[in-house]
Length: 243
Image (cartoon, rainbow, N blue to C red; front, side, top):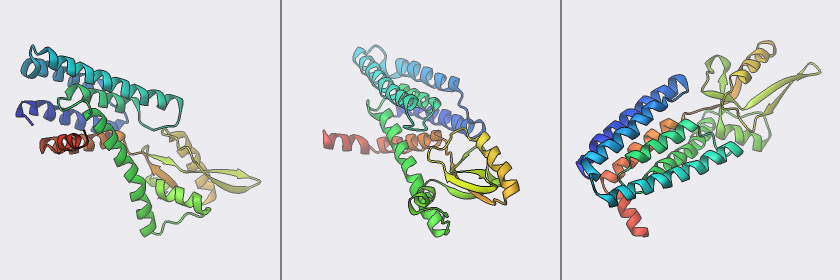
């Protein structure tokens, strides 16, 4: 990799760290920081890389168009279904990364898909943690597996906005009834308040919750990991092997 691209890489990591901090603290992403990342990338590439080379500009604009269509598909799928919890801010982040892309047309998609793979590893880690901690739910086998893969039994005092309940409770005929939540809410504050009210009067010490890990964290990890692969020329070798 040419060292002329280093300023874009460093600035990209700084911006990703900044919006990751924002997402963790406020559950919001400052879109303007992504705009500055995209603008800086275009200006830097125009001055130091592409200059007046029409072919490079053509390839650059083409990969931006491919990234936009790719992310638009995921945005539409998220609107019409429960396909994913990926928010609009995360998609904006991937698109901003597309403006920094001077590797190949697949790079933004690689970042996105590797972050998704990391997401799939989380349930596996949760399951083995619950298994070794002997956290066994009092439900049927399949419901218990669902809870062990997606959540943890936590004391309500430890719960914050980054957890969503996997159980719901109601009182019927003076009897406490618990059920599994198969479509967890990504904005669970109201549900948590309801659970805490029921827990006070029904001696509920722990409830199964799923951690809402900000996807931007996984994007940051994915970006840094893939940049290292490109630095050592590993991904281009893999692509050339299959092509």
